[in-house]
Image (cartoon, rainbow, N blue to C red; front, side, top):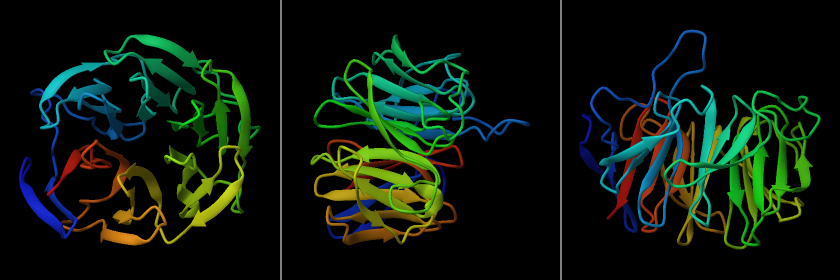
Length: 295
């Protein structure tokens, strides 16, 4: 399929126009290229601001790019700010942009135009591996309805940290392993409107669900390397190596597309996010960003 070509997928309430290469970058720009001796460079995550602007985080020369809802480029920022293994982006309820950098072990808060407000963690100073203190290769953040922020300390610690609005750590939970409340990699984190915490425990092939205090509520299995999930109006969208799926809040299936549908590698997904119309954005491992516009 050529770039900027739409096809229709799905049926019923879940029919979408799928645009494989949605974001119109400036000429000669890209979402990253492979580099010898470094992790693969790629678009990794994103979010949608209240005004509809779409933020894309990439391991690239221009780490944060901003687009309108049609994929037209608006601006970029963050050049020189992040490591080659930057990982997660989240737009907070107050409109600030939080970037999680696995490569330099920090979580940073920015204004929408890229002015840095706060840094949690010390750059290039990882906490001891698996000892449980923040941070050792963190991956993402999510915001609870009570105002707390939860950070997935994913690759090096296999923990989740809970912070108050002032940045003070309240508690942590998790640890390495395969049992309930243990993680192989805490790849991304999401919180629903009821305050339940969902963890993409990717290498354990599951999503785990917790309450606000970190008590384990459920394992959600049947996935192959689930990378990320996002909540919409009455639905949960999950992306991973096995494709894209949509579920009810009770975790009953509504729609599913394999990784190679509609063509090879189309839905091999690293990051998932939604706008207010429940259109779906996907960051792919092949350095592209797609949009599924709901019909």
